[in-house]
Image (cartoon, rainbow, N blue to C red; front, side, top):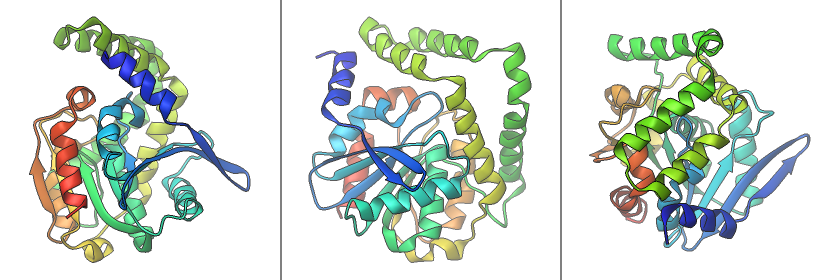
Length: 281
């Protein structure tokens, strides 16, 4: 079965459900086998969590997997983690592990800080963070991200999102020769709209403006956080903030992987093996 067909099968076989609370609702998928539960927040740039379906398929073999879609009505990380924290007991989950990448890693940190009773272990990949005592280099990375978000509205007047999407697809075509694999990327990128970009950028801005962490927030997770990093040129900080993240955590496990946003969609083995080993030991 070709990659695009595998993706379509995953979407067909894994039903999207809706959890309602008062006037808010959140879409989610909950599937898999095993005692451990993993909340997966892998969305990165134009690729939503389900784009990494090969990772999800590997994880569901030995774990239950929970994925969520960010509600379009929610504007802050505080609102988002409140909905997630209400969804978890609704699904009769006592405790879970969280896998977060890029800005999803920021959401993972916020859940771990504000809802420690819900969290067992955390895995972070190429993510961003903000602490009370950041080194100048990390502070500069955060400042650049916030500046880019502020300038985005003006940038879109000169360079529409469709132009960015076309350039990204050209980049993918340069490194991937299989036509059906390119079809998958083209399909996923086509689904990404300006509204999605505004929601994503708004959550990142809110996170970097209002979320401030210090070591005591994660002391209860001593030896229970794995930080995965790579040479991926993530636009939201990524590997540039590894040192800051490591200083924030108590005895984290740091693991380098040969991966980037594209290759994780195509080949999930190394990534999935490291996650399963960490969670189930």
